[in-house]
Image 1 (cartoon, rainbow, N blue to C red):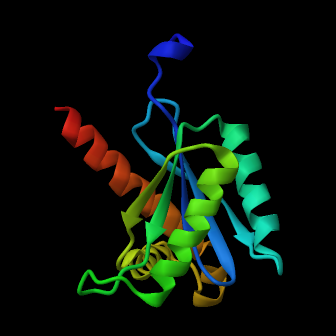
Image 2: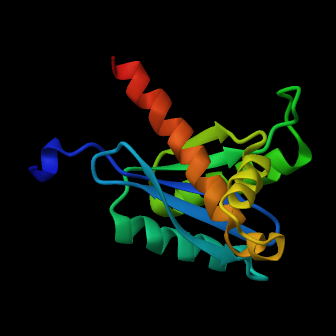
Length: 148
């Protein structure tokens, strides 16, 4: 498939206080794939630079950032911090930011890992990237549905 005919790729983030889960869309723009879990550093600028490098490495056209809203849909204090982080990342990369509702994705990620037979103590290493994958898949599904 020629480069110009390919759908855009997206990098998705599940931003937490200790870790950031990262996922990327496949080259067809249909499925989300887990990439890694980034351990947060003391300086948030270091996190931003690491994520900008990943965005360049995968040649993404945009960033999908999980927006941690309250179950009611209202903004949470964590959502305000996440949105500020996302805005900084957008400035650094020059890429569009898509804030995406992430309510219950971490809980769903734990359930998926549990059903896959992973021990609870193993979850910490991968739960954030599974949550990022769920966020991105939801974004891709809606995007695809809007094209039809």
